[in-house]
Length: 270
Image 1 (spheres, rainbow, N blue to C red):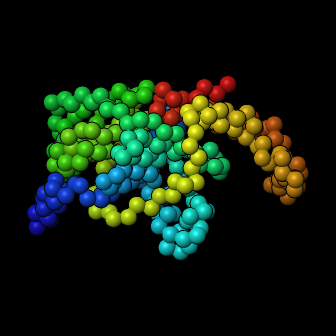
Image 2 (image 1 turned 45 degrees about the horizontal axis):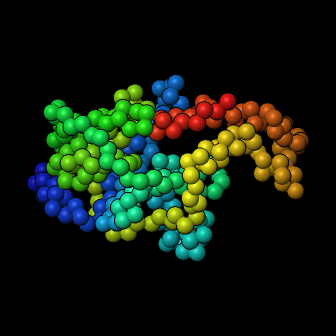
Image 3 (image 1 turned 90 degrees about the vertical axis):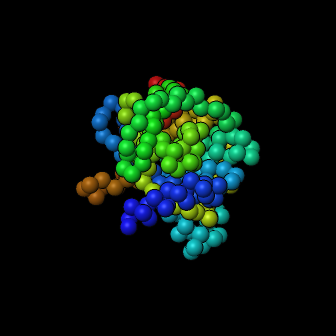
């Protein structure tokens, strides 16, 4: 009975893919490419006739809670915001918007034209879960990728910016396994909650400058505070912060956790 229901679900997916859908992916990634430690997060791909939005489930939950409890707060952007790996593919404007947030600062986005991805579909096939999958490879912005897609679900979509294969991407990873995406589930979806009004459009060179400015002086705003800042030690002593030591630690972390999904866009910190 369960198998029949699953096959019926696949049949419905094949012929109703034009409607609004939500695809869940488990994303595993390395913030530090020199270690084996992987971080996991649930990402969702929301798609309608106009655009695809790839964003974190944490952001979706935050949007949902805020929208239900306080619309004014939602519109002002006063909520938890996890913008890592967030992209919007706008088919009407033919652009891809990528979103960034530097620590707890403002939200920015860059925009680039949608381009055809140079997929190479191979003959290799394998079963992943309940899906018959076929292999495809791709070079994209400094990384080599392997994807397994299924024609059982005729959505030419996948995680992040990856789209254009003749079926939904079920699994995808770069060849060094710094980033992996695994399909979890597919749902119908009628509402996409995403507030991009707070995002400032900037160029890639401006984005690089923002990251470098933060690297050189991560406590700039704190040092300009008129109220002053005091730090309480483990012994209860209250003293002025040592911004030089704090900056050294932050800069060390920034260089250590510098492993962007688009490797060709990596910023070389001194």
